[in-house]
Image 1 (tube, rainbow, N blue to C red):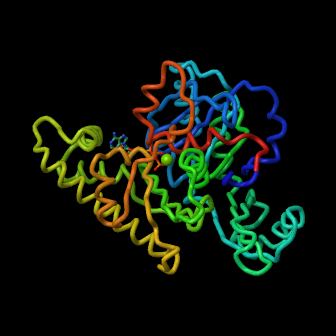
Image 2: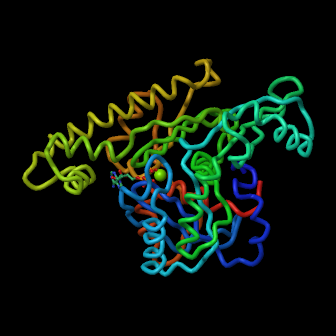
Image 3: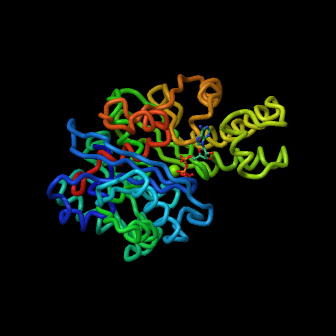
Length: 363
Ligand SMILES: Nc1ncnc2c1ncn2[C@@H]1O[C@H](COP(=O)(O)OP(=O)(O)OP(=O)(O)O)[C@@H](O)[C@H]1O
Ligand SMILES: [Mg+2]
């Protein structure tokens, strides 16, 4: 599994791994909370319930939960409305708020590597190690002579606790916290059996930011973020047509709004998409050296904004590669009365679906 080691809550995890009361995979975004209820694991994993709840714009700002009470209230509403039963929670923190560094160490066994990383991490992480939870992922054990490439991940404790305290305030128990970049990787690995020779880009377009994760086979080769997402599309529509945020959201999603010319709406959405694409291209320009084995050959989109009908084809034209909207449930069993809802919002559930495969204590 390509996830980040035991997860950044790993010290707690072994306490919660007995029985199968199921889990809630909760992706707390700035625009909405996405939850999947799951049972079983591996090939027996089933998605049994789901929900999406809007979140007030005061709840999360600058990638930190500013109002745990608002987040807890939205989670409680989801639990009641959907009849969610599980209480153990798998969650994510936003990639842009996380420190991710690539490092190279002499070849050594797993136990020694852990010690080495703990000893050396201070040289890579620009933050007091007392204030962060540290984790790592081995990327490659043989690319250069006798060395190990490692992805170091440090997450500020106050950032994690802003998310976990909101979950606790909703009466739930956080047992795994991952980073959205790696949940996205898991989603891809679970559903698309990556070709080890192929380089592809996962692009998740949310409300405030978009994630780019370039994968070589099932390993992350590059991560970057773009501070532009669906909210900025809505703002541009609102400003250009002098609409309220709600009206603009409606116009953006449906492409029409009574009393307005749909070509005007389309033109603004295209301008916003162009801006997003400029930013994505700029971020991708930091990846690799442009050699043949680093050419991106496909893009998999996800996130709420990936549902904009014109976006995939615009990205495909701009980057000259095939682009598809990911199906996070391609290889997962979805059962129960919520199946239609889940499948029709599949792109929004990409990160929660990646999380749903995580279990406490796994590496
Ligand atoms: N059908 C749709 N068509 C176009 N855009 C949509 C659609 N459904 C939702 N969106 C947009 O997707 C965005 C929300 O996506 P998502 O749920 O991935 O974001 P988030 O996780 O809440 O935010 P972030 O990750 O940026 O903090 C909103 O801007 C919303 O307008
Ligand atoms: Mg999000």
